[in-house]
View (cartoon, rainbow over the protein chains, first blue to last red):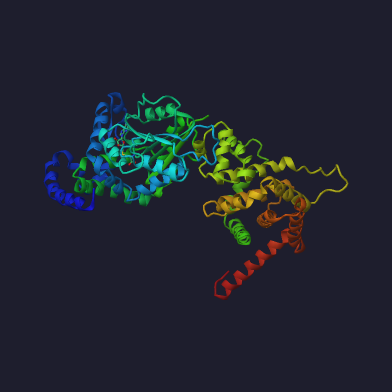
Amino acid sequence: MNAHSARALIRGQLLAGGRRAVGSVEREQYRCFSCTVRQAQQQQTPPKTAQNKDGTTHFGFETVAEALKEQKVRGVFSSVASSYDTMNDLMSLGIHRLWKDHFVRNLNPGRNPLTSGPSEQKGWNILDIAGGTGDIAFRMLDHASTINHDAHTKVTVADINPEMLAEGRKRALETPYARSSRLNFIEANAEKLDMIPDSSIDLYTVAFGIRNFTHKEAAIREAYRVLKPGGVFAVLEFSKVNNGLFDAVYKRWSFSAIPLIGQLVAGDRDSYQYLVESIERFPSQTEFRDMIKDAGFLVPGQGWEDLTGGIAAIHKGVKPA
Amino acid sequence: MASRRTSSVLLGTFRAASRRPATTWRQRCCYHSYEYNSPPPFPPAESAILSAALSHVPSYGFTADALRLGARDAGYMDVSTNLLPRGVFDLINYHLVSQRLALKNSVQFPSAGEQGKKLGTGSKVRTLTLARLRANEPIIHRWQEALAIMAQPSYAPASLAELARLADEMWYLAGDESVDSSWYTKRASLSAIYSATEVFMTQDTSKDFIETEKFLDSRLGDVMKIGGFIGALTEWTDYTRHSAVNVLRSKGMRV
Ligand SMILES: C[S@@+](CC[C@H](N)C(=O)[O-])C[C@H]1O[C@@H](n2cnc3c(N)ncnc32)[C@H](O)[C@@H]1O
């Protein structure tokens, strides 16, 4: 959205927001501006055993039936599909684009014809899961083409949400890849990628998506299945800030300010509240690294790289050859 | 550039040696080749890729290309080089670590009884230093690239730590078991001499690196002249310690 319409939207939401806030008081009493942090801390240890027995999972800090979560997540991203950049900007203090650049540059996608034998397979086969708006996919293709002179690397963008995919297709029109066979979009759930054959993918990426999956282990197992031996699983995700003071400040910012700003900017407090809470619930760097190892992957070094003090982290796994 | 790096290495080594006695001790007990039961320094997949990549260094240098070719040789793919978080530096580090650990097998000293005269610690250190330098021969025309990467701010600490481990290993293999205050200065001076000679060797065009050998001998000679290897630096640090104390005293502090 451009600056002008954003301003108009904010003005409109400021007016509407006041009214709406009154309406939602019964449901959201505890989410008042000043007490969200305390509330969040109290809810950090929900009765986990009960949850699994009756087939429930969590939606942010709300506990919901598993079948409902997929639907709810879909709802969140439908409601933020077009304003999701704003959300990422808020959560990352404005630097998610730099993280994405770093993520892609570091993976160095593409096969450089100058250093590759002629008879070998051309280009990489990349699967970008939860790729929604194509952010990562476009970067991958740009890097392969301009840095590695590779005109063959392909990216398949998969997302559970048709509206995110529609946004991605729309944005693709502004890139050179819109009508080429190097980019395609499919609707798929990361936990069940039946349409992708075993051992067919060189690089599997998921950026700011995996924390939304209902069964993260199932998604990691699927990643292992579809990757070729030697293939790489790479995750960019919000993570645990590793400095106590910064953590306190960041939590206060994310739990109290972001849902409010979400309300003002996008008129959708609930979705932003969910996003903040889902980040808080996501496993720590070491826990997530161990989940990747448990699925059979080799991990490089300590297994992850912290970005900006741990606000986000990049995890990688390599399928043994 | 070479001389600037050498002096920063010197400074770094002294600084590291004086500031972190505890760490150095810990390193000493974990990295020695005498720890026969210690696990291999690199996991199998990394070893396979890196050792294959090293064979491409003479023609491709310490580059991402060498890594990719190594990955393919080892049955992996280009993308698998993501297994190495520090990329090309991991390749350099692999060379450093494996050549350090290879020293104990490549150099064998006759035991005291076998020969009429026992080799002194000084000559053993010289033999070991030369052996380690010789291990750079196949890649010497690429070693300046490697030195430039090692000097990058994010890798310099790891490079210096590895240099310290090399000096430590050489003193250990030369049979030096002293634990007195000369421990640090011996390692610091050997680190400095080794890295200066290593840089010299990258520019040496003489036959069989005869000039490098001479260079090493005159560096070793320098320290020997002032009180036998150990003396040089002990004297220097004693002197500075005393003068620092005197400065403080002159400012009225009771030390
Ligand atoms: C915050 S967006 C991230 C979009 C993009 N990758 C980026 O980095 O900006 C999270 C995406 O995950 C998708 N998603 C959530 N659950 C999913 C699942 N089970 N399978 C596939 N995609 C899912 C959502 O539809 C949404 O597009």
